[in-house]
Image 1 (cartoon, rainbow, N blue to C red):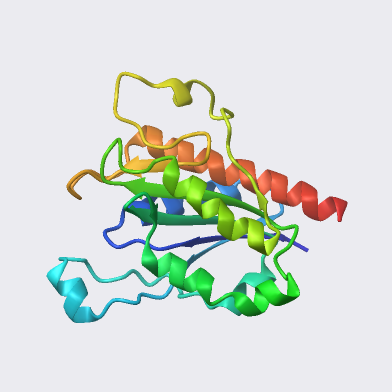
Image 2 (cartoon, helix red, strand yellow; image 1 turned 90 degrees about the horizontal axis):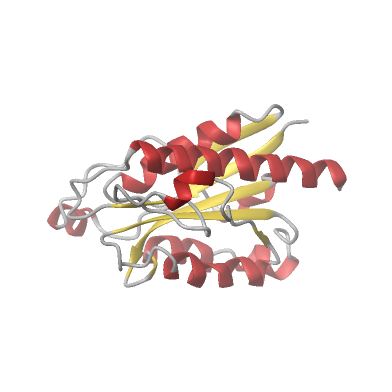
Length: 203
């Protein structure tokens, strides 16, 4: 039976979604792993989204809390809002109380990726504050550490991400993930999928 890795994200302007697509490719590159993209429900009205110049959502399926039970591992992604995950993703996690009560997600590995507007906008705090959500569910946080190698030490170009996980800088919204940031996202997907596969085999 295939190891299932769910890449679950919220993306308003497409930056997080670009990373999610690469993470899926990385996870799917591991033999025996089935990777699937999901987006969390939007909580803002069409009127508000229009005023924010948000583009239409993609056709990636919208996840429900109960869908999480079917996965063996996760990679959760979101943009930052004042140094923390966006309200849309927090609202989704707030709806997982039923899974929390029964600890259905306990022992399952999970990674985190993110997008911020600037270099001081929360590349580490967004991930760090998100770990509390994993802890209460008993999930195992899987950081990428420095396994991405030389790409972790890039100083000649702007690069998002950290030992916590892959990341990108959106700037004013016009900057999309760079090739290096996408490569790091691919690496994260492959890395977490490999760990998820090993944990499932050992269970």
